[in-house]
Amino acid sequence: MSPKRRYQPPRVRPRREVLTAAAAAVAVVAGTALLVWLLRPGPSSRFDGGGGGLLNRQPRASWLVALSAMALGVWVWWVLTRRHRRSTRVLLGAGGAVVVSGAVVAGFLWPGGLLRQYLPPARPFDPTELEEELAEVTSSTAATPDASSTTTPGTETSVAPTDPTTAPTTEGTAPAP
Image (cartoon, rainbow, N blue to C red; front, side):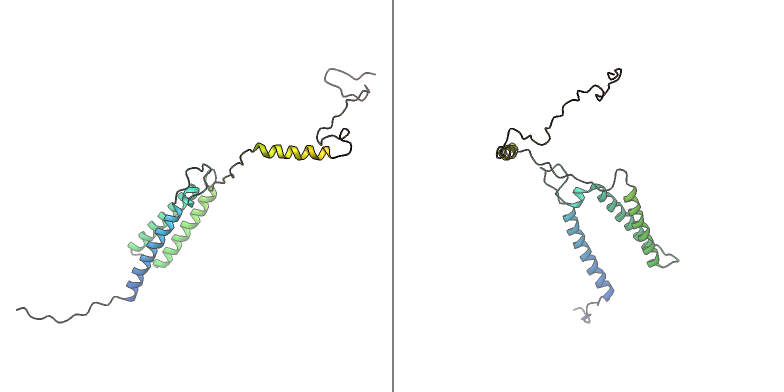
């Protein structure tokens, strides 16, 4: 028979370790939810770029955000894996400021502009609307007391001047004396 072992209570984890694990779990869930929302596809019937998630509608901005996040991740990894004379917090803050300001400058200098501006889809032509408008115009001109003397706006004609001294000259011809 083997000797009895003494009961050892489970090791209590430090509060900092528990909070770090909980924060990592929340970050994974929030990041997954954000990516699902940003990467949702748009309808295939829309060719103007509308619909879908932000990464579907604004691919240039998406590339800039993704590259900036990768650069920030590399910087954080580099700072945390090496011993530095300066404080780690100072290096993380300075590197984060450099990455974010670099992303802003890149956004302003991006060739062809960073964001796309989509025009709304053109309204399809409906011939019945044109016929209704034409019927309204003709009914309003027929309702005037003297329809034969009125002219439709924009259709006035001008008569050419008959006085030769005021007639415009063309190249190579002179007005009559």
